[in-house]
Length: 112
Image 1 (cartoon, rainbow, N blue to C red):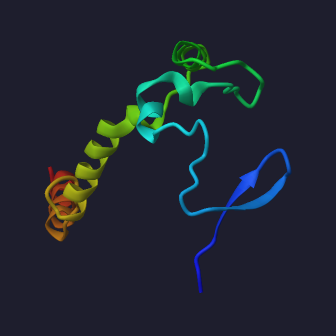
Image 2: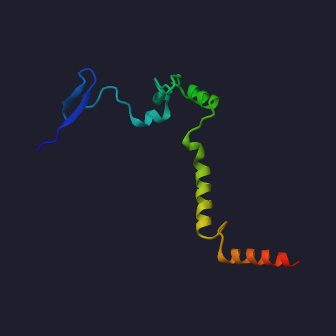
Image 3: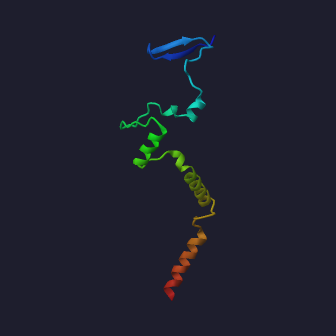
């Protein structure tokens, strides 16, 4: 069985079979999108604002008190460390000894 390849033709609104060596015209290398503003071309928010450049996107985010997930990288890393410390008993964990000590302090406090 031979392998067949199809692409979506927007003009015909259907799949079209192409040869194995076919390359889409005007297809950019994915890395170019990371180093240019091409990913912003024609971009709009759900409420219709134009954010088709990095500057417009950044300004919109600032005006509306929004941020992107990459701003939380360190926050998540530190929160993970605190959780790990808590669950391994390094910090913040309440032990039986802590409870016993608290009970003892409460009992002796009333005797004074």
